[in-house]
Structures are given as C-alpha cells and as structure tokens.
Length: 269
Image (tube, rainbow, N blue to C red; front, side, top):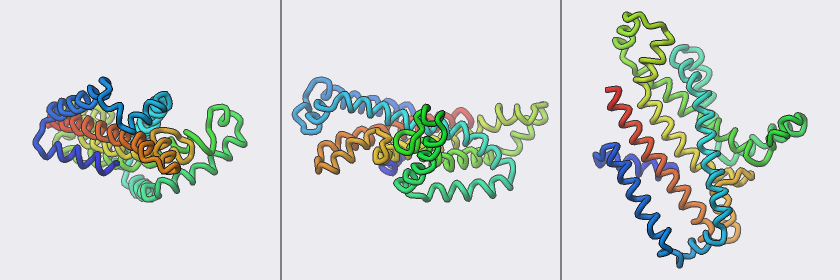
C-alpha cells in the first residue's frame, strides 16, 4: 500500500502536472467514484453488499484508522522536529540517535506491535492511572506507540537534511541583519527546509496509513479489522472492504502532500 501510493503520486509528478492540477485530478477522481456510490449504481457489487451490512462498523473503523495514522504522525512531528534540529546542529547527537532510529525502522511491523504489548501491559497492571487512561497491552496504545517509533526516523532525518541544505550565504545574510540564532532557525532555516520536511511527512503518513492496517492484529482497530476478518473467513469481499479504502487514503495523502511539497519549493525558490 505504501509503495503503491508513493509510486502513483510520483508518476503524477513526472507527468509534469502542476500541484494544483494534481489536486484537481484528485478531486475529479473522488467525485467520479462518489457519484455512482451515492446513486446506488454499484449496489449490486458484493463488496457494496458487505458495506451495507457493516456500514456503522465501517465508519467507526475509518475514524479510528485516520486517528491512529494522523495522531502518530502528529506526535512524531512534535518529537522529531527538535530531534532533527539537534541532529543537524550537534554531531554527537546525530551519531547516537540516527543509528538507533535506523534499527527501529528495520523491525518488522508485527514484531514491533508484539514488542509494545508486554511493557504496556505491565505498565497498566502496576500503574492505575495508566490503566484509567486506556493504556493496555492490547488495543490502541501499543499501535500508537509503534507507529510513533516508526515515524521518528523519516521525520528527524528530513528535518536534519533540510536544515543542512540551507545555503550558508543565506544564513550569513540573516546573521548580518542582526537575527538571533532562534530567529534564524524559525524565520530562515525551517522555512527553507520546509519542502524537505513536507516530503518526509508525506512518506511517514503514507507509511503509517498502511501500517495501521496491521494494528488490527493487536486490537488497534482500523480498516485492518475487515482485512483480517476477511482472511480468517476466506471472504474476499470483506478483505476488499478494508483494503480499498486503505489504498484510497494512502493515495490521497500522497497526492496532497506531494502537491504541498511542490508549492513549498516554489515559495522558497
């Protein structure tokens, strides 16, 4: 799912479509699919009959899927932004942090979810407040934590690379204007690094939309619930009920952030 969505978004970029044309193409595609869905033209399809039976569950899992993927990326941005700045500015920090995050990135998703279950289960068993907050070994908590850890490397590395690509003469000009180090960071460095950072966010969001489907195995919910129920029941229609919207979400995120990255490049050029 991750690779397919990124490839489609990159293919649109290589077709020399401008960012606004890509967004318009996305809206047209959504409208072209929505019209027959709303009119009932596709109600005879087996996957649509499956949806009719499970429509309430479908939208509940859709909200959870978006919340898991989006929430983990937002949390990774909060942690990854200062981490990336530190990696760009302090060489010893980069030497320690990046190899650790690389190791985390190589852990298979199912293994990562499994690794999160034991410590969170112990935390819930020994800390009443954690249990009251809904932190358990199975459910949303291990899913969010695993997705957060997967997101840190792309976010931190994109921030570090973006800051390193800021031309030195621009930084010197900002310093000559009397800007402090913090002002240069906020008004110059991060602004010029924005296209690279957005590219990292795009990769992370599309990645997490796909990985969230696997979170259903540990009770995290999302569209993966239908996929694994369908696999267990040998019901292809149920698998498609979870797989198709997951692909659509990943593709939408890829196209939107690809367009945003292109627009940011134009503004910082």
